[in-house]
Length: 267
Image 1 (cartoon, rainbow, N blue to C red):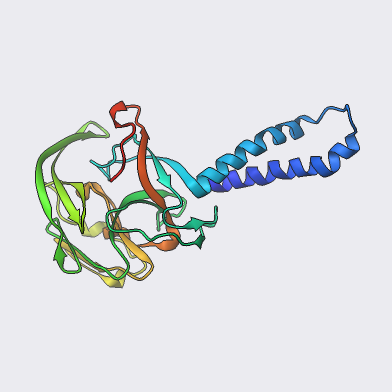
Image 2: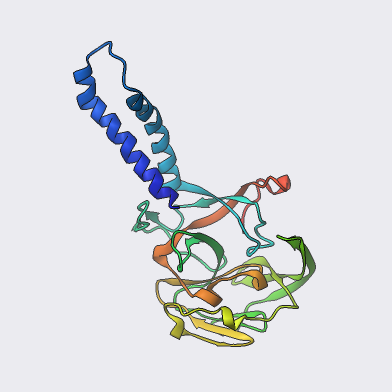
């Protein structure tokens, strides 16, 4: 369900009723006559909807993390804020950029519309920029032929949905000058070839059992989850066009299961 579209429809309906009453209905009604209930409700809700719509469309938007694909950076149940202005001012609903501000950089945690189903919002980390050649081989990352530094930091164990215990190894990965944590499951293969779909730009990629190599098309981005062996990302469904970008995740404002996460910045 497209919440932005619902908000826009409500804004148009309540605003239209307010204008209709202001310039037509109130004049006919005369002074001292009570407003119809639907006019009263519309006039009460219109300013609230307008403020919420403006904030969500142009400033910040809240999201909830539904899966563990970005662990350990983001946990299931994290409520996060996404900066809608960082990557340019976009028209709501149609998501068309009208004022460029900046472009995504390697290492940014970005929310975007899932290319296979644009009604869904996904969150992953930007790995490859337009023109980059990204290679993920034997669970190591190369960008433009340069291996990205990865330092082991010990074990990281967690329990996923269904009470399944998962053992992984935590590493600190460096993208340029930016560092972030990733999880590697030594018991999982580098790639599940059977899960790779036919996607636009598929000819830019080559695969085998231990490697994927892609050249990122202009105007698009290569995304990966930090929980590398538990993330369905650009390795499987391709690239994220600039037109599908929602914004940059920057802040955790609530997690009812772990209150210590409140107030953490997203790196």
